[in-house]
Length: 306
Image (tube, rainbow, N blue to C red; front, side, top):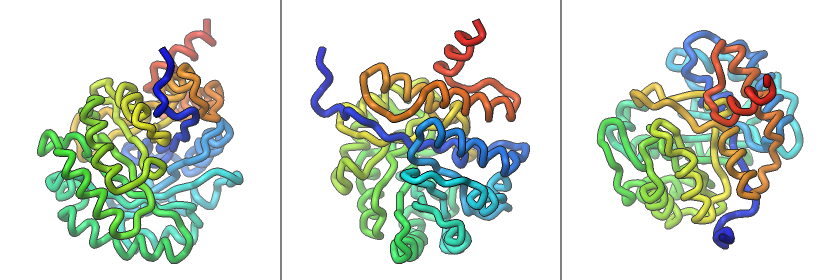
């Protein structure tokens, strides 16, 4: 069977491991280890890396070394380094670190917005408007993370109209591209396509990405569902690092290794060296004293050991 004409021949991945993946780790991960992880990811061929978050260390102590990590990275031309900025204060702290892109975030669920950032969706957009404006004025790109686009731990299913409304609000304040995120990993292919369709009413196909958690083992199926719509940008986390502190039971991001293996098996170019990627995942997993949360990594490491 021939691939659908919509399926892209090349896919670009954003590795969110250093930020989204490590932010919930209880014991401190030294800046040097985070820097080494970024270096290993870019050496494996990643062209977009979400490095850190400029959030109050009171809320996310793990990201308290943000400036040190950004300063320590040996940047490679052609690699985009992004950081999360939850408010204007965070953005102002981030500017000196010269990020290529900042990430603002909003939820398609009112309850999640209240629990996650203590304000309504409308208030969150209002809060981010000056951040977006300040970033664009300095020539820094802006991405909007849209969480809970298919399901919420407090509200259950999320209607696609709600996702479309959030996308519209993000577009209105100047956000250039958005992530359609299944934060708690309850999405299935048709639901993900409906959330994508709602987003595509406001953003072109080149300005959307899929961010799927693997809580119920659906992340690869959801990636394929988005690929079939022509989506060519996805977020994943090396070694399957990370979860969501406000989403009980969310086991975290799909592993970059698993996504790359699937894409390569489909003949889709990612520009990523899978062996080097597995090495990067093993490096951080060894530091954290646990096995990589990636089926592909497990298989490749077992094969090497054999």
